Length: 135
Image: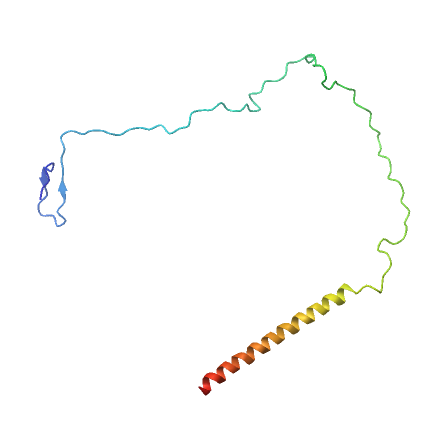
């Protein structure tokens, strides 16, 4: 029960463990570098140099020139007064149906339809039970 490269068969073991001793150890480990190639990093706030001190360079033609700051008033001007006119809601019209009444009618119709469906279901179940009992 030994292979060609086995040197020792351990006697007396129930699981018949085989100990193999090899003369030379060959290291076939290969190191693979899976890192991505480095890309240039975008400049961060710390790497952007400060502008040089003193007056700025000459501006190109067509660019915005500096302008003096305007003076702001110390106090804001008050909003204009608006006189109250007619009521914004308008007049109540009796010709139009009330939303409350219309929604109540829809709710009552829905509840009646549900009650009728329940009654039909109960009658159907009773009819099926009676039919099975008589058969």
